[in-house]
Length: 306
View 1 (tube, rainbow, N blue to C red):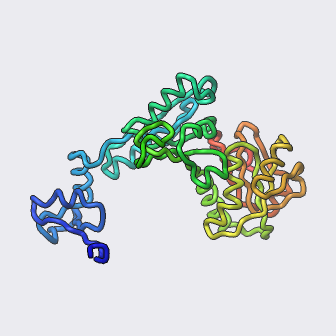
View 2: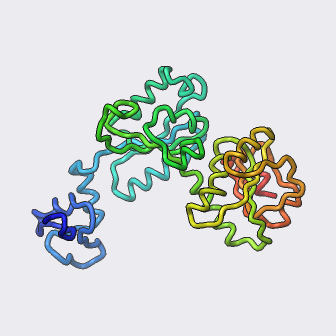
View 3: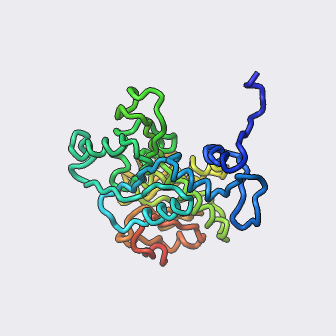
């Protein structure tokens, strides 16, 4: 009975057996370049295995990119390409620029068709998604993760083989999954900062803004913390448009606040542009909250300087 047997790792020894070590997926004995000799004939290092997998076409080159409206100097290509090189992978990460107007906002536009072709390409490996496309990419996808569905925005698209290609959104060989990982980064930053703070505990967190990133922040401070085994915060939402703040707060079981003069919290996540020069009232700072500003530019926003 094969099914009742424990899993086995099978390989061939000697130079002729290198292929078995390259094709094997896990738990294969390996050596290291720093060791004076190998433990068995034909044993190779992980770096050698990766290089051979690349050279022999075991790993197919894939194209990855960050989807944005205009290239503002994203560091994603440099970081990901450096990681690919370090891991011996033949992939390439670049920038994909699509216009805000006349682009994905019209699913029948030429731009949308080109985007479909891009996603359906056999060489497509994945996509990072930035504003303003986090909502607009969703009609092109087959499924959303729980976090993406609850947040209502997608920041990552990944393909996986489709069992029945006729059932995929684009009719291609891959199922396209939309995920939102923004909340993970927000949770991690806030949790790390909370471990260092010395202020009194209120059990409350404040999210400033009402856009897509604000939704990720609200999810992070509530359901996201619960998913990480941390205690969820009582959520407060502040935005220039009070009606949007109220709508966002309701969606995540929080409360909208119109005035921050007497608000004290443990954590603050600002999701508005740095050019807004937003600052907290002095009363909010007395409790020494953990603060995260999601704005890219400037590096030191008025809130962070404060």
